[in-house]
Length: 90
Image (cartoon, rainbow, N blue to C red; front, side, top):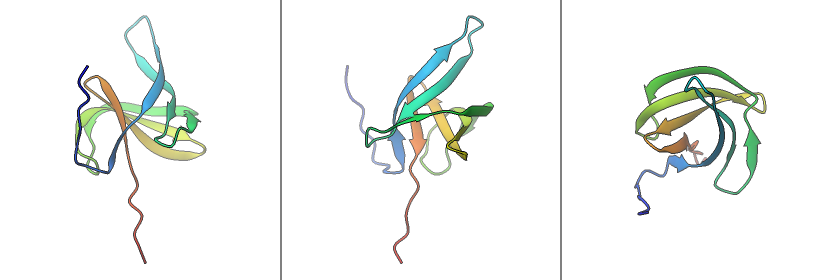
């Protein structure tokens, strides 16, 4: 399989543990951030087709609660990605 490379450093492709239901629903349970840490998804509050305005790309956006904070997890074609938060230098 050929690895696709993208120039946008705000788009982080992640490994995801997900559950496929018999009715076709796909629900993320956990993801691994680029540093190798695993995060459990506490709750999925919304699932819709949407674009990532920060990182670019379009897919199914899962609005998730992780460690009490809201975050977005995107399923784009056959890959999962998240938006990296840009830290401003002061």
